[in-house]
Length: 378
Image 1: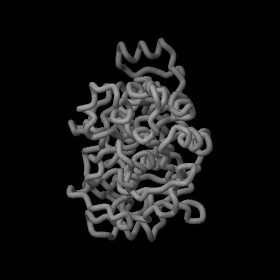
Image 2 (image 1 turned 90 degrees about the vertical axis):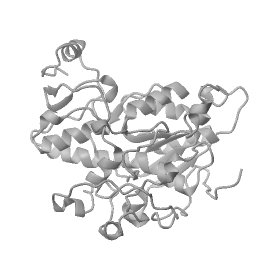
Image 3 (image 1 turned 90 degrees about the horizontal axis):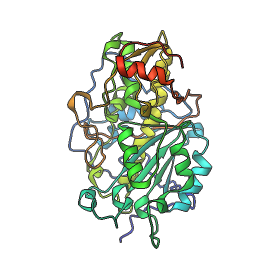
C-alpha cells in the first residue's frame, strides 16, 4: 500500500504539517453550491460568538467571508480556530488499540461533552454478509472531539490479530466514555451512528445528545413559534452555516474508502464533524441560556422524551425523522443534504451537561399514553 505521507507522533498527534486552511491542503472545491441561509441581520456577517477558549479571529473570519463563493478559502473548517497563544486544535490520528487507549486516557477521559461521528467503507454493503471483514469495513473510523483536541481512531487500520473479534478493536477507555451516561456524546443523527457502533463493536452508548433538538429549541423559542419545535433532524451543514456563519466544506472525499490509510483531505474532512458538533453545542447552549424563560437542555436522545420549552412544560414530539424529507445521512454515513461538511473548534467554558437522569416511570407513562403537557417531577 502506498504511503499517504501522513505521519504522527507516538500519541497519534499530527505534527505541525497540518494545513492552516483548505488551500494549503490542496482540497478541490466541491462541485455543489453551499447551502443558502437567509441573512436577516448583521449577525451572520460577524464571527460566531466566542463561547470558549477557541474562536475564529476576526481577520481569519473576514478572509473566509470575503473569499469567492465555492472556493476552498470560503469554507468553515476547524483550522480557522485559535486558542490561547494562537494554538490550533490538535488532531490525533490513531492506528492501533494501544495508541487509542493512551490518547483517550490522557486527553479525553475527563471530558463531560464530546463531539462524535463515524465513517465506514463506501462499498460496505457488498461485504455486509462476509463476517471476515467485520468492523474494518462496517465501521472504519471513529471520531471524537473536545474543546481543544480531535481524536481519529482508525479501526480499519488497527494491526490484524489472530482470531480477532469485535472486542479486539475496542480500547477500554473508548468503551468507558461511550457507555458513560454522564458524558454527553454530541452529533446529528447520533442514534443511528451509535446503533452501528453497537452492532459492529458491541458498545452500548449512553448519553446521546442530538444537536437537532437543541437547534429546534433555540430557533423556535427565539421566534416564539414553540409549536414548531419537534425532533426532526437538521443537517450539521445547515446548523453550522446558520450558527457558525460559514458554509461547511464538502468535497468528493466524503464518498472515499475510509478503510484505507487516510490522506490529508480525509483527515481534514473526518476531523471536521465531531469538532463542529462541539462548537455548535457551545454556541447553541449560550443562546439557550439567554432565552426568557430559559428552557432546560433537551434530554439525552435514548430516553425518547419530549423537548421541554420551560421547566415543567413539555411539547409532545414525534420520533426522529429527517427534516422536510431531506436525507441527513446516506448509506455511507455521510451528511448529504448540503455540499459542505463541518469542522469545529475547542474551548474550556463551563457548559451545563445535558440531563441524563432517568425520569420517573409514572411521568414516562403519561407522556407516552397521552402526549399532553405534563409537569415534570424530575
